[in-house]
Image (cartoon, rainbow, N blue to C red):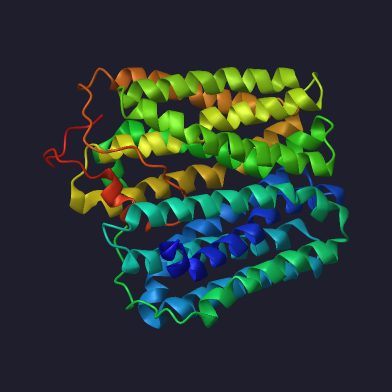
Length: 416
């Protein structure tokens, strides 16, 4: 409890930020469709979010090094508030694309600042408990944000975006009034995508497939939900159940990943994802209960793939490489997430709602084939413990580094 109180300002900022940012994607999709945006244009908004997110991950450490944590957080929050409030000034798909880049940049920048603040204050003795609290707050706020979608969609457009803007601005307050001193300005780390490929080509492929699954579902899911007859309030529940399924599955997925060859776990999750895609398509004709159950199943088998892939890549990295490896894996996730929403939404427009899950199924079929191919390259090697890896900033690797440490030698292996 004392540890929670110590980091309470940071956790409150995370919660308020997630309540704001978690609602803008689905709200944009529903409001945009009502305003006459094409499904491709709505998907482009999701891609723009991840483009801004990637820019924020890259820029935030450099800005913190120049102006410090608190000012950097305030600057990123201002960008996010501008992007949210600007939605009510003009209803145009291309304009909203730039607004979503601003909100994506805000999310990545703010998470980077908060995680850098935690990074400077945690010790080996407190890291596990603090990260557990951080993850619980983040997931809980994400669930609440998705659940609010129905209420936001029923409000006038001005009111809905004003409320999200207020929440975004409110996330500054805990850090602005805290007596906890800000850490010294950090030195920006390097981004080395080649490191991830050197450690594990399979992990890179799995992260890309995870991006196709997660970004497509979260950003294009409202289009799919509307196409299969869900009301706005039900679309919020549809997305929240997906998030809940993914969160609950982290424990059994981690148990399996620490006891079995992680490549086999990835294959099993991908095969289950293919079946979940088929079940979700079939559930469209089975009523709302079937659709919700399929969403939970889909989240349970697709969300843990990123963490399993991350653990597998860290098995072949030295302690000194872990932070840069986590950043490199998130880089590949951002690449996949930028491309996925626009392409899947365009396919939905051309082929119907089931095209979303056809694309995701094809991605997982490719991952299964690549996994089987890479299993012939070398025997399994496991040195690090599984840890849930949130995709929040390039600094998350440092925060989870001690959870991945193991007593075995740190000599990196060959490619897997």
